[in-house]
Structures are given as structure tokens and as C-alpha cells.
Image (cartoon, rainbow, N blue to C red):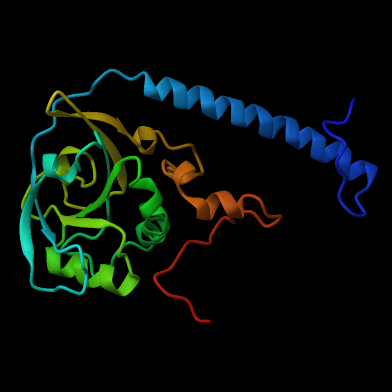
Length: 232
């Protein structure tokens, strides 16, 4: 079969190139399929009207421990930006610690938030009291994210970031504003349809950690998960 391209890496064998080209064909097909899915997603009709939930939010500066204000869902939309990406963070009031998996995911969001916010609105919601969430956010250095408390509303329950027994779940939701009204647009519903023997993996495409590890010979592993801290 004709080689995919003329570039070669130092010392590679013919066996390596043949196997790499086979993989490269699969990677190109995956890239094409990802764009097909993204285009299909963009054609979704408007979802249901969203309740204008009232959250609690602190000052933009995490060092300001005293400022607390109410902010509605509609107020999480900045002027000129009609899309809101809102992540449900697993940190409920009865949880002794924040979810390590969510924390790893949000660490990545915080690093990219300045870029994301050039295009859309981005925020994190958790059910714990605001000061508890903000104290954790300070420790992680999440200075680029809007972090709000949903402790006094039903947002997490309504959009599947919380189960009826009040256990917390991770969920990404996207809302859009049209003609002054906020509508639900998309959710990471793949969580409802797990593959046998796998975690739900409904956020994998948004999570650089797993994408990077999938490039390695070791892969992501079967029993390794992020932690809140590591021994160096």
C-alpha cells in the first residue's frame, strides 16, 4: 500500500512505518468523524426553556473573601456572548472532599478559560456553600473561572449534576440565549449510556489528561485516577 506521506523519523523500520500508516488512516477517519459529530451537534434545535436560577457568587478576585452576591443564570451571560458552558462540580455539602476527577478536569478548564471566554461564557457550579467552594478554588488557583454555588436552588438536580439521594454527579451543560431567553442546548448525556467495563467517559473529549495518556504505550491504565495531591 502506498505510504501516507514522505516524512520519516530517525531509525524507524519498515514494520513500524506500515503499522503507523495503518494507525494514521484510523486517526484521519476519527478526525473526520469528530467533525461530522460536531456539525451534527451544531444543528440541534433549541432545548427547553431554562429556569432563571439564582446562584451565589463571590468577587472575581478569589482573595476577596467577603463579597457575596446573587447572580441569575441569565446573568452568567456576558454582553455579546450568547452561549454558556456550565459544569456541575462534584462537591456537595456532605462530601468531606471535592471529587479528585472533577478537580483534575477543572484544573484543565482553568488553564484554558482565558481562551474559552473569548468565544463563550464558562462557569462552574457546585452544591456546597459558596465560601466552601471558594476556599477550595483558592487552594487550586482557579482564578480564571466563575465559580458559583447552587446550594439554594435546584439546578444540579434538574440538570443531572445531583441524584435524588443527593449524591453528586459530573455533568456538562450548554445553554444558549436567543431573543432574550435562555434555552438548554446540549448535555454530556453519554454518562447515561456507559459501555460495559468502562467508566462513563462522557467528558473524555474535553479532558486533555486522558487524550494525552492515550498517546502513550502505557495508555491511561485500568486502575489509575487523578488525586487531589501527589507525593513528589
